[in-house]
Amino acid sequence: MALSRREKSAINLRLIDIKKALKSDTLGRREKSALTREWAEKLKLVGGKASPATDKVDPLIADYVDGKFNSLTIDLFIDKMNSVDAAGGTLEQIKTGAQAWVIANAERFDLVNLAA
View 1 (cartoon, rainbow, N blue to C red):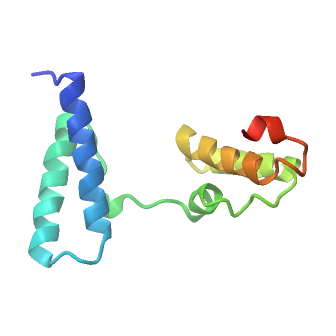
View 2: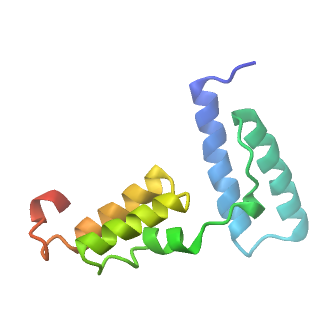
């Protein structure tokens, strides 16, 4: 049975909630186990394959998304962005880091109108 767009959206929202809960340190062992099982069941419904425990982000990608390269010149930043892409960064991650760089450097490179 194919899921409707609304059903997939609801499942994806629940997956986000589960992932946040699993990353918190407030859950007991049984709660984590139950949420991990629910995660796997929901993920199968929408066709996913990753598990929340093994969903690790490359440190380069994490630093890029966190804006740690915002002080680089445009040429060095583009090189770093290409490295993130080569490391498996998603389009959303690359876009987030690029937007942060533009906002951080708007005045420096006279990009004030682009950052708004």
